[in-house]
Image (cartoon, rainbow, N blue to C red):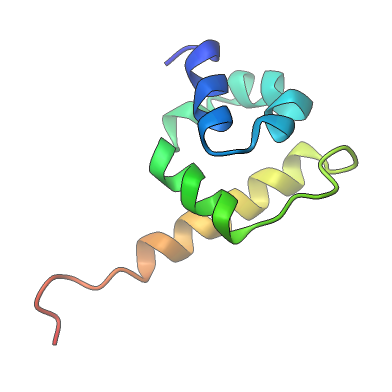
Amino acid sequence: MGEKDLEDMFEWAGLSYVYEQHGYKMWLSGLEDNIDTELLDHFSDAYSFESAETMYYDEFLFHLRIFKNIRKNNELPPRYW
């Protein structure tokens, strides 16, 4: 996935202002290998980044990784009950 695909993914999820602030760092760190559009969409519904201008990239990445881990570990297998 290239830089344009990553930008489109953030734009679709409604996080284009976060991408504008940290896009180059995301692309360099290989973030697109660890996320997908559905994860970003749910992440943007759960988190509000009103202070994206003052947010550090590490802070954003921390919240994204925590959200991804919670989402992964809270899924119950089919026919759990």
